[in-house]
Length: 119
Length: 517
Ligand SMILES: [Fe+2]
Ligand SMILES: [Fe+2]
Image (tube, rainbow over all chains, first blue to last red):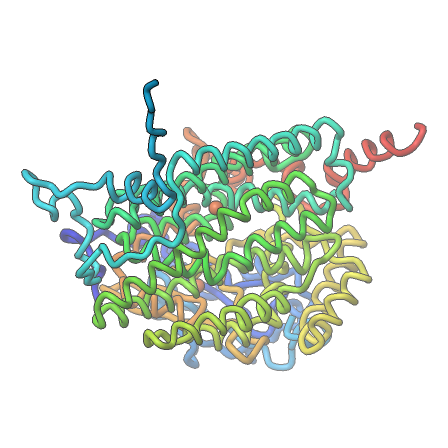
């Protein structure tokens, strides 16, 4: 459907990738850990190594949680747009097929939040 | 002796006729569609504007007289409240944070309602609804003014109220109420009436004003309580107008039904999402609670709203389908919302805290199916950490919903352990949503919502720093720059209630007022 309007109604989207100074947005959520109220939005250059995000950025985002130090990344399950997905830690975001405003989540089996409450 | 016949006075009905519809005229040298250019493009068909039944027979002269009298009484009470240091009678300084939320989030909407009704009151081709909208437009600007005046008293004593208008256009959570109203006033006149006049004023208003006004009454805030009561007779008029409009539109042409139904579905959801702020206010921010959010939803929407939709069934209108989702969220909404503000308490213009033990027990009693299982562990953990000097402040920006602009904090309907993610590809771009309903709203008018001013994305684009800021300079602190852009003073307006200037001042001043120190 289209907007009902008195004349032509067309505007550029506000969040196209060229507005982010060489970065693209990536959204990252940690399943079963809702102590962090919502997934995060982060700007990264497309050439950034995926593994550098996991080791360099995620601790700053999620490190407050006591479960974070217990994560075994080899066992983490990943999802992209909700579907199972396998990232290559050695490759860049672009090489991993991650584009602007993609959303990924990870699940850490056995770690279910504060007192198992998914918090 | 001359006999003067007494001048004949007009009866109420005649007077109304003369002073409203009698002021209208048929244009002779301009085309009607040029005078009312927005009357048809939304697809609503009106065949006879004269069929409009005026729901209240109020003329301008009576309006001024009546409202002036109310205003005199209101300002007398507000003055007395200010002069007697009434602010020291509130239950607890934590209460003041609801006042901050109201002034920054709601009062600017009253002003936008004024503008919206002025616009609609100009654009409807019928004289009857034009007059009714004119009066509501005046009511709304009075509401904005009286609220600002009543609450300005608190600004003399407490933090976070000093730049409410500036903040409304910038601060991340205030983009939720702001974008809601911007969405409504950029719609056509008929959609605006269904959005604000019906869905908001009729269906949802009791969930906004009753909690704030009765919250004020329960917590000793006479100033807020008084403007609430003063607005009450206006609200009754607004509700009548909202209902009258919808019946009129539906009676005019059967083709109007699907359009109106879609607007009701959309605006009930849009309004409900804004009420997330009210839900957490009721359950977490009032030191003395009135009723829980869940109870309020059950009384004002499920019971009262249910009766309303039963009444509208004869026009073919159905209860909005989002009501099912909302019923699944009512055990979780306020807890998830307060958790979000606790996360981002460094970037909010009011204080946050973990509820006291007795407050948690109240929450457990009101939410037996959810609080102890999902939310108490989270809150108790935060409390323990804070006691060890490790108060949690989330410093990474959240992902937002493209439609309602709320952080993606809502969980899957029926599963409070999983965040609800929805997405759409549109013209080569990705868009994300908190719910099926926000997604559907986008899908119907993507051209509109690709323009959403999402605070998180705007920060990353570099648009939320004070002018002249160089984000590439060494030691650049983005959070500090964003707070400066908000006009929010770090350490004063934000952070935990415990240890705040508000807390200390209130204690000192109340001590001086009640003890011999
Ligand atoms: Fe109002
Ligand atoms: Fe949403």
